[in-house]
Length: 458
Image (tube, rainbow, N blue to C red):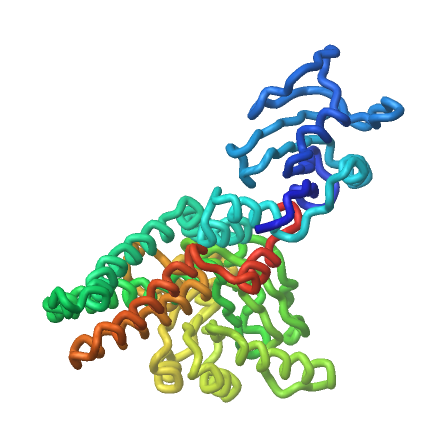
């Protein structure tokens, strides 16, 4: 458990804003609120829980007002942390917010650590560990699809599924342990074939859940795609067209882009980080050569590539070289400038890059952009429908893979007619792995690693 002291922190982002929230949680939260808060109209007495109260924050000794605020008290256990929680909604000037927090800390609260509010919610049973991790994913979500996946996890959909798997496992384990505890009753796994079939069914369900990870990870982490090509083929124009704004400088002069530009775009719910890189060519000076080297480096680091060719010119040796460089990457070939007279032979492109889909666009006029977005979506997500339950967290995937391996060993032990004690060991390990996902069993290292990723006020 944890030391039952009172913690406080700013729950809203750092910076100037209209409103900021300072959160207090713990046994002294209500006492601190009473000392610093005076309700409007001179009304004193008990603060009603889960109600917004209007008044001022003041220095307890001098009575000097700091700010006009709204304050809410949420008494335990019906709060985010499961403790008494107070939230002060003050004006969002950085100095003012610091002063309100300073006042609260001076009255006995301690500054919260990263993720400590959510950690207390977990330790008090307000949410399980998978739900707590879903909160972090919800904060970090970059698209509507990523947000929905995170919200499903916060609502406990993954936890419910894992809980059902655990119940199936426990039913199997009970039969195995009965054979161990009552050998004289000749239980000795009389239904070995039936148990083997149940283990196999459970293993398939877990394997299916593991298979959703690559799909879910894309929505959680996004995809890094490098826009590559020789100078002046329209890479920066394509970036601007995909973003719908002038983010990169575009001129007719080759080599305008010397560094790389990184921007994120939403492609049908898939967060894609686009890297617009310097044109790949023989550098004419040291700076240009450094830019080309950096472009090749980003191309190797990217998970995907969009090779841009100029449709108004025949394919060049530089184009072919870039296509060869991108051969091992998932990606598409974009023939840009279709608004001009076309001189590029697509058959030559196919000969160099036979596995790449070719999309024709005009970045200048915005033609073909939907086709490009759909092609990238298909390339990374495939055509499969969305699974009902999706694993997005590497920790969950690792635990499921361990449980799958242990079930495989249990299946073998049953098939070989080994003693029930040996079967039970593998099943117990599987149970431990499933319980670790939702936090029935935990260790402090895992908890510290998870909650240290949160911001201070959450």
